[in-house]
Length: 152
Ligand SMILES: *[C@@H]1O[C@H](CO)[C@@H](O)[C@H](O)[C@H]1NC(C)=O
Ligand SMILES: *[C@@H]1O[C@H](CO)[C@@H](O)[C@H](O)[C@H]1NC(C)=O
Image (tube, rainbow, N blue to C red; front, side):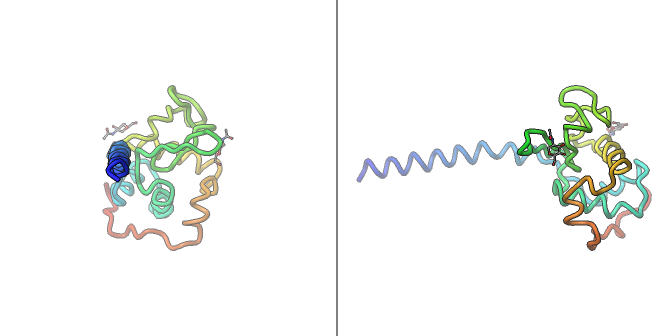
């Protein structure tokens, strides 16, 4: 009985350790506020008309986390607030791809490059490049950005 108790204790300790290991990943998240995103979109020449779509997209793909990096089943990676794919648009470790940018620079708290690259993607392929946009934003009610200052 005492033996069994000890085992339970040990498992509990293992669980605590495992959970502690997961905390740094959560701390790395950089959540951009809706109005901060709107401000940056404006600064990068995205018209007010489309800003609701961009905010909707960011919420859908990254929950507004500018530092989000995710691995896809096909072993490519998606980077940043707009989850830009590493296959075509950027290069891991050095500047490249159709956006001529390091993928890592698309997942920092400065979202300028992520916006510029996403703009390139949208101009070439449209919002339909993002399946999550089709699913969550196309023809749907978009986030209300009317309370965000028009001028940055
Ligand atoms: C992996 O999947 C993503 C999303 O479907 C796609 O954009 C990308 O081109 C794919 N990468 C490879 C290497 O096939
Ligand atoms: C963000 O990055 C852009 C270029 O990548 C730079 O021009 C801008 O000054 C940076 N903004 C801040 C707040 O560092």
